Picture 1: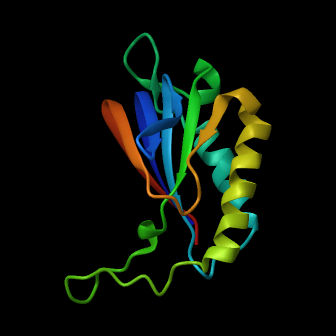
Picture 2: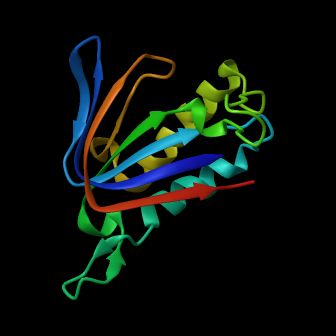
Length: 148
């Protein structure tokens, strides 16, 4: 399981030229699942992203989590995170989790994040949809998390 976590001032998902969901200060989380991922990875990753201390304290030191600041998260499924570029110039996606299983993992990841942060603090995209993602990266701060 991979997550690209971006600290944002704001972020949104647009589908069919309409804003589907949006957040203020918090985290944009792009998440992808690999075919060898275990269901237990979801709990680990939900705790990790919600507890990741990447928001600054009064001294400018990264010390607070999204939960500490009362921020929001926007979770977007992105299977291309499983792309392998070791050979050639075209990414290989054979290690991606099949969609029928990945959607279950995605939904469970959302559920776990809502358990930690609260229902109203977690927004999403739509699994498998063509989406446009907009964000104002705060920092910029971008962290790649991976659980194998």
